[in-house]
Each structure stands twice: as C-alpha cells, then as structure tokens.
Image (cartoon, rainbow, N blue to C red; front, side, top):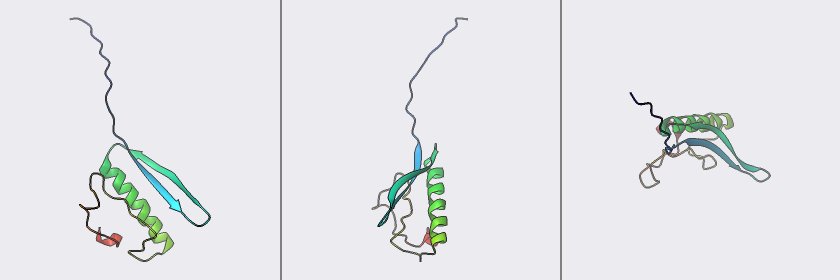
Length: 87
C-alpha cells in the first residue's frame, strides 16, 4: 500500500457572543465567548442578556436592553418580542 499525505484548507464558521454598551460616560464592546454552533451561541447570548436584565431590574420590554437575534433570521422574519418570557 502506498503511503499518502494530503493537506487541505477548509473554511470554518465561528459564532462570537459580544456585549455592546453605550452610556453617558462609558461605552464599549466586549466578547463573551466563541462557539462552533449558532444555536448554542444564541442560547448563551440570550442567557447572559436575561441575567443582566434581571439583575438591573428593568421592566419587560425596556428598550435599554436588546436581546440577541437568532442567526440566519432578519428583523422581518422575527416576531417582536420585548418580554423575554415570551421568547
């Protein structure tokens, strides 16, 4: 049997969860994880946002906090959900 070695270059898709904050005195963007799967990244981003929303005590539908949109869907495809308990 003949010995063979082959190298290939393959594209890789990763999903990064980020947090952006804009305030009167502060602002910036931070990364909160890198994931192989869009569904897992969305679940993590949603859970982080929900935890912060709960910690801040802001009411459901408060426009100061925005939950992540699922990958592959546009705003046209998504229902308007301001209360995280409805998602």
